[in-house]
Length: 435
Ligand code: CMC
Image 1 (cartoon, rainbow, N blue to C red):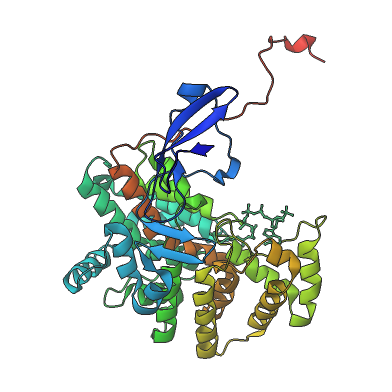
Image 2 (cartoon, rainbow, N blue to C red):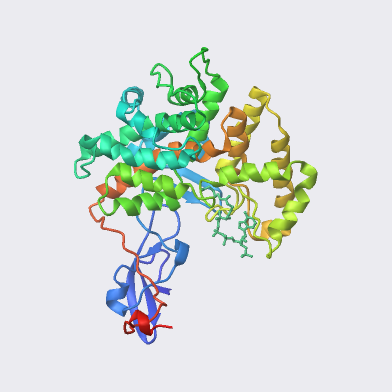
């Protein structure tokens, strides 16, 4: 591609065969420029090919910015470290949704509105009984969040901005209740209803861990850790699940269905499921002395083993969330007095990998999921709940992405094209004559 002269070119030219085609270049406020090839097929009769979207911007967005080379993550311009250190999750949710940090009055009002939506319809409680007791909490969440559209008919008209906002509030508010109930159901304990004099994260811990026969005191260290974990997971630009939410939403599907689609995508081990996989891997390694064996396996091209919680499509320096998560991990382990063997294994694994040529050359660093499993485990969550916690927090980001897409006047249904390599046209052969 040739760009026209100057440091801020307005067009770029693609040469295909003997033909030159000019396309606009758009400049963001940060990050690489984009070549707008929307009219490429019309002009040149050719598609672009980019499996995994490694060089393709799928949308314009003002929500989250990632600079993977510098290890930077900004929500609406604010560094993730500052938000996790000084703010709280509902403030971050407000920021993602509305674009600016709230004033004190706006924050109070937002917290109040979220708190008023924490209950789920009592009929939905029965919905849980349809699942097997050993169902994975993510399976339950995909089902229950999708089912919200069957319960809240007054907030599924996506052309109405008021209904869109009500649906958004409902999902942020109800997600802790839905996730906690999934946990209680699979552990065979009675559901614990929300208690509105508690903060968002304290309420979630109580709904997960309180039992009817004794008073549950929320540990403030754990409530704060939970809140910071939610902040770290709240958004990450156009990751697979956010892109899924946008693609599902582009057809005009209702917001509850779109978020359920995001949850389904998040579940995979290459995405949100990596925290569960990382803890299983650390448990499998067992002791720091066994780390070199597993490093060897991760580097062996004939072995499918990968270091879970390592590597990222975008973060090629260090995942800034991993650094904060490591601090939270130390705080939680100190507070709970939990066995820190797995933390020792994780630290040794990180130390060895960061000095190993293979990982240095491929720019593989610990990601958010590397320390989150150990932390959540020490807080009392079983591995199957890790991704559910991630989904709960990412709901704020998914909704912000969905809201932005729906409000964009240029929005249209997402419809990628393909490179077809199957059979060309052939005649149908009667079954008796095949063989
Ligand atoms: N362990 C060992 N080798 C690795 C790893 C790893 N964790 N990750 C990547 N590689 C190697 C890979 O084998 C490949 O080598 P080669 O060039 O010789 O073929 C090279 O590094 C590039 O890997 P890739 O799979 O082409 O990179 P990607 O950008 O497509 O994948 C990833 C990114 C996150 C899927 C991948 O690094 C991975 O599978 N990591 C483990 C799973 C994980 O921790 N996922 C959580 C991501 S962060 C949370 C979230 O956003 O959901």
